[in-house]
Image 1 (cartoon, helix red, strand yellow):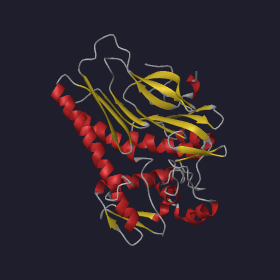
Image 2 (image 1 turned 60 degrees about the horizontal axis):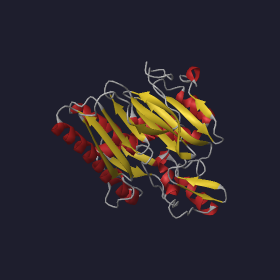
Image 3 (image 1 turned 90 degrees about the vertical axis):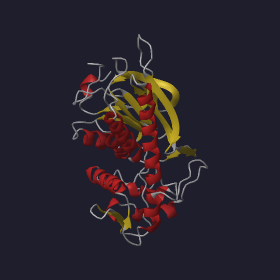
Image 4 (image 1 turned 180 degrees about the vertical axis):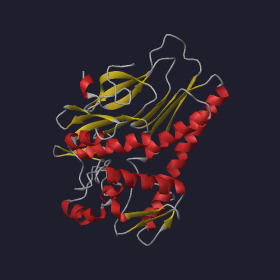
Length: 334
């Protein structure tokens, strides 16, 4: 066992926002290759190990190409992306999309069903009205007028025809709560297909660790949600997906209230029952979506949901700074 906190699936846990740290090793760092990039509106970090330097560099290039590909398809900020075309045209009728986008939207809708609507890609129907850089938000009347458009049931996906349609006017979708995790997981699959057995891929708050590092686990530093330089603890992980959602990623404060990018679909306002949620499990697509879901649900309902999913574990920091653990971690709390 690699750490004090073990999940039901035998995996290690984390305690809040995740920062990957260099693993402590006795040997040299030869054979490891790394690169950073800015893609999908976030920081991308890739590290791979292979004795063949050329193969390792090709593997990194494959990951970055995959990230660019997903950004071209799923970015809500690129007018030429498939997602932007869906948002422009899907109220008029079914919009042809790639099978990949149709599958991911369908998976997002499945998570919506699982979470009773806490995860809802139609949050963008109001979310686009917030400007976190300039500190602007919609007024209460605008929110109430747009709120009926937030409902995942408005989104209809025809997998056979690979089309997406909206059943109501004013609907927009945004895959920000699942696309980065999907990109990381797809990249991990590509690396494994190239024979890479030790690697780490990170896109913002979503990380996938493949294998170990120099025969030892990767170290994960847990950031304090109210101190960007503070780390609550460090834990080792191996063959894990880890995702964190926090109210410190994109936000502004107004009159003592924090407005951030994690929108509660029920209110059209920022969810405020948590400061940070970390999910650990076997699939980064799912850990990404679940971290957003639990942030909206809050500690009581969120932990109850995770306890029904045996492969996943969670640690939440509530609005007062208290820690909440899923049941698989509770016996091993520090």
